[in-house]
Image (cartoon, rainbow, N blue to C red; front, side, top):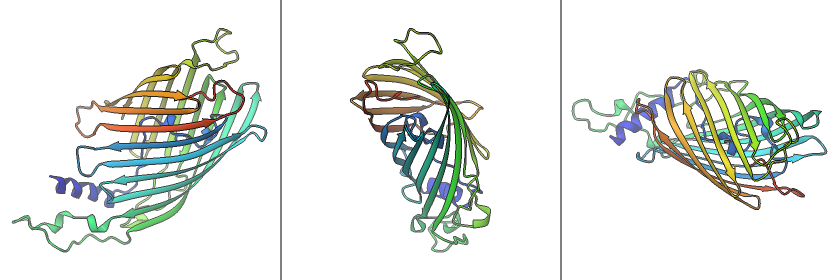
Length: 325
């Protein structure tokens, strides 16, 4: 059974006409992963470490890890960010390494109202574990005994290319953000067989995040001094060629704990329920997310995510709007 699964996944990896980006359950606690313009949105120095594991019941599970740094420079009205993401599929059969550099610029419309624009440049280094591949034509149809040769043509076992993405967002400080982004603008060639037919398709994202401080008493659109107790909600939509993903979530923060629940689906049926538990202490934030697969299609898997974030900010009692679930 495991060999059959490896064959199916390998065929998908080699012959799929485009590559699909990795996806975390909760982009909102993976710094600036949903939109380059969100780099520096903590208005502080931020370090992030995120890890996701899926398909644990199979030998060919998925591992995705991401580390990042971003910082806002208030006087210059700009932010920078760097990130490295590693995605491992099928125990090393397919590996993606992405190195990203982000610059975001802030335009102040009036007090507490801003437009943010972000540009991201990335370098991808992808690898194929040829020695771990077994194709269907390498099994004798009568005896199912393995055969040494295959007619599959693999042109290279590694691919490197540059990529660019752009995003923008509208911000009402500590209350609301709405934005969108386009990833892989040039649709670079990607793959190991028939390179000209394998492209990294553009990905479009739109998102909205809302935060309501539970201790605030000065009106709905007044100054939002975020305390340690607040309600948060968000929604987002992503589309990359035929792949579509919509999710919405909400939760509560009662310092030092945070709780959240989210729903993800492919616009046809509810696929996943996500549950988040988080805690914060002196700028250190820790989150655990469990995805419960609920679709009747039986074509997915539950997963675990762990996130560790450190935020350093001077002269503030509350260092950041902690998370937009």
